[in-house]
Length: 464
Image (cartoon, rainbow, N blue to C red; front, side):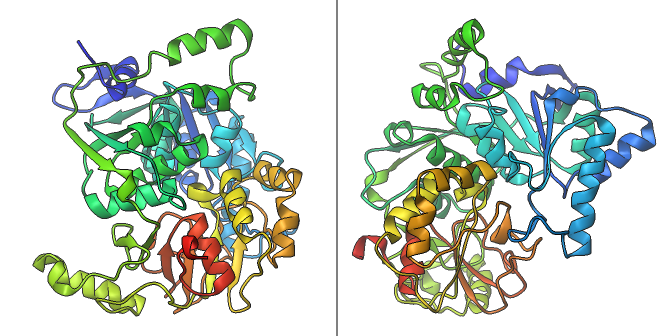
């Protein structure tokens, strides 16, 4: 019987199936950070349990850590307590921990792939919704709640209802200046933030096959923003080339065995999906959001929809969103002033994103009216930036690098956008207050962010 890629991986990890209930699924890799794990470890203590397979779990601090002065104690007492608690839990339960200033520390969804912890055919979980990022390697990766974090720590299994399957085909060639982030924002705008609820998505087609690993990670990262349980891409030579030689990845004869298996991880000819959609990527332009959810996105040169273009049931929330953002139906985004620019997060904090940004600003100068936070996704990314001389390009243009962390993706650390200010952000969510109370977030690609950083207004990067 022909199977989808999702079905192959899921079926290979079934431990048992509860009659008329969920599946007990074995988990290959468990990532933890400081925000969603403390109660889970407390639960183990109360039950007198150890971590069942500690070698399968990796801890890293990312959400609460500052991105300057990491050699000093964390100023915020709540953040400091959460990070300190993660370190104590790692020591008590004998777990690998990349703490602040550890050379491999960084955002959990960045350090996992770059250190070879993420591999094709795996099941991967983390107490974080953007765990779908790891699906770029041909893995079933999804976020779990704190009670499920405890379940995985205790048993290396989790109870999950089997999702439906969806294939999203991106066919054709991208226009200049259009990135994987634009593909994702276009997709979410088309399908809406609930359009893939209940599904696990496989991304396929010519445009997906032509994406680099960094771009694939960006696309899979945003799967959750259209309601999907996760997203994945069949591994291929791009995947294998990225993985070869990384720590934790098999070597020698075991590498050959792994490759032989990984090459079977693709959807069989004739396999059926519960839903299938095809997009022509030649129709995609550089995108930007104008509202308070990732589905409120549009081509950067378009205008915000009028009320009569919105379904009647959604007009009240649509207007509420525009009121929060300080926009009106029919407004153009081009030329609107920008106060902050943020390059980073598990969506766009990799070396490729910094190369893109640096290449665009080279020979230009930062706009004086804009505060720009450039935050590598890990210390390894920061090292690559310096090794490639990108830091010199950025400094010449008037920019400064910060230290790794989740930073302004979410208001859990010191990098908060002030109330009423506009931030062009390469992160994944633009909810009310996501980047700080009253902050107004415009999601975009690293190229659109770079254009805003040097002009001080929303600018089509292809027009510069």
